[in-house]
Length: 154
Ligand SMILES: [Zn+2]
Image (cartoon, rainbow, N blue to C red; front, side, top):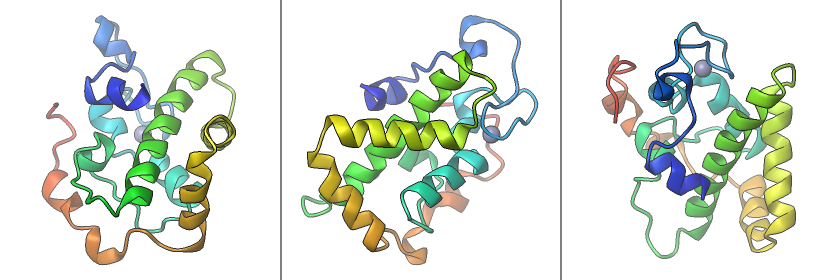
C-alpha cells in the first residue's frame, strides 16, 4: 500500500492540500515537505543506508518510485526497495503526529514492524544485512535524474 501511494503521489504533504510549504520532516530544510524533495532527501537516504546496511542504496527518483527494472532473481533488491518506501512513508506520517520523535528511530521501528508482520521479508532483510545489494557502479542514474530538478515534479 505504501508503494502504491508513493507511485500515485498520494503522500499527505502540506502543499498537496494547498497549505503553505513546511520544512522537510527528515532534514528540516525550509519549504521542502514535498515528494519532489523527499524522494532524494539526503537524511532519509542516510536512514535507509544505515538501517538496511546498503552504503550504495540508490538515491534516485526511479528507486523511490519503484521504477527500476528488477529481474526475476532480484527479489532481495525489489523487497528492500519496497521496504525503504514503506518505512519512508510511515515515518513521514508518524512524524506528523509525533514531531518530537527522531525520524531515524521511527524509520527503524517501521522496518521492524514490517519484518514482524511479514516474515517472508526477513530472509531478504538478513541477506541485505550481510551483503551489499547495490554496488557503487549501480549507483548510476542519480546524477542524470537529479540535475537540480528539485523543483520539477512527477
Ligand atoms: Zn529533506
